[in-house]
Image (cartoon, rainbow, N blue to C red; front, side, top):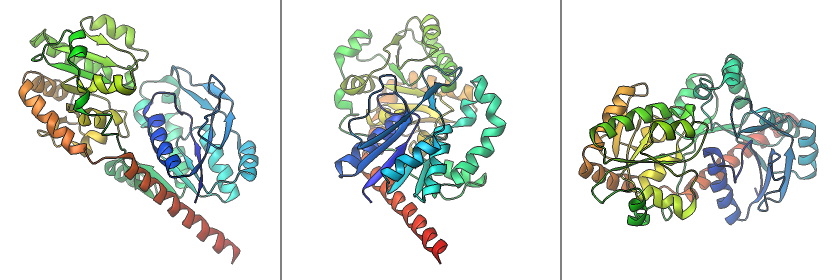
Length: 386
């Protein structure tokens, strides 16, 4: 196997968890000498990714009520012609929109091995966006049919794999997420950056990294920060990210720092210069920011699911609360927010917990699953020829 086709509604330089994961895997594959193809909606700049050998762009249309996100129109005939001319060894479909559906049809028509990814928690997203809410009764059975037509469906946690199996999903496999331990490390802690925030060495800095939007359960974050600030006005809060709720948050939390999007060394410094990471989201399939925060030496308060549920032992690397327990989340934030020594001790444990997670090992899993899908496809071809 040497040529892999990616199909995705989102791709770098877009900033979201799916694009981040695909970028890391693609980089690892390129280092190993694989040829990559890319099928995606046409980006705003209309430029091709210079790292892929072949790229097919389709017409992009916005998703109503979801700022900054677009989907590709179905293009089954284009895909069939594209893959007939440049046949890949395997296809990875990362998103289940119209483009992904047409890619699944085209790949099956051509007898190409297909692996799909379950990257987005649709049920949670649909609670916050009108169009998605309207489509929810139809999308649930569609997603199951979609993924069951691929040889393997990759999910990031064992708990999610079990949940999907209980709903009738077949051939689900766990492929976690990695991180760059040289990038996300306490070594990037910056006294100068903390000084800009007005934080002394013995002041607690609370960090949030992610989209500032309703589906990330940001209102619960606000309630926790207001409770913390009410107990101790010296506490600092820092938001990294952007989204439709930013202006509202800036008005509600006028004492907090809003840094917008950060990347590279700057992002690493924001993580490492804080003390406590709050993550109230209920819409994650994994949550890369949790592992990045842990690697940076931060204790975490999070809901007991996704990456946090897999990686954090409550009371050791942070505090976990039940998925629907808003009061418990606020109470846990107050518990650590008023005990800086304990919080920093948990942060050191968090760093140790994720030290061995690498994108290289995740890529090993990814390639192995593609080989498994190829074996299934070859077996089906041989059977049909008997």
